[in-house]
Length: 178
Image 1 (cartoon, rainbow, N blue to C red):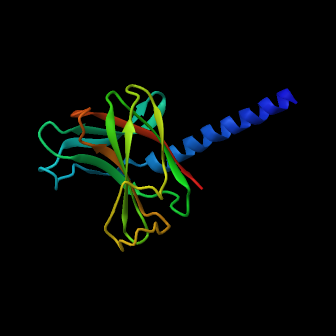
Image 2: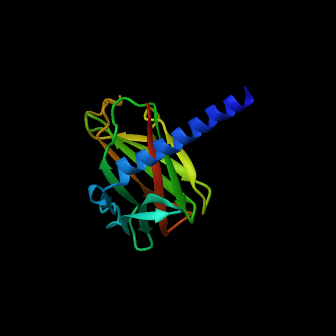
Image 3: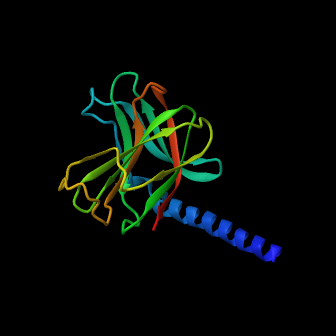
């Protein structure tokens, strides 16, 4: 039974790694589908950009950010992949500096749900989990406060904070958990 149990664990591990690879392919296969925003409406915006890079042997989104001359946030956004009803979203993130992460999801009624997450492990990959029912802010759309599936748009970025004025945020392994 011990070896059978180990086999089951290995299959679960391989399935998880395969799911993560599929998630990367679906979300990051075409960098032109992503749009960068420098948060122009806040103090003229920040400097930065978006690209797809190879990091630690995997494909990752790369957001460069620089708040030294102004701005309050930067994001990269795309159409939501797999937006039917889900319980959470898992994302692996990495930066050389502590950063205030920002995730936004736009629902079917065009209401934007914003989630703020602390990145606390500089130089290491950290998995973050987003619960669509627990935003830090909601705005726009029908403003009814109820997340209307399917999700339509996804954005990830960095808010200006006391920890990092400039740097790079990598993100990978975006998984929609049903």
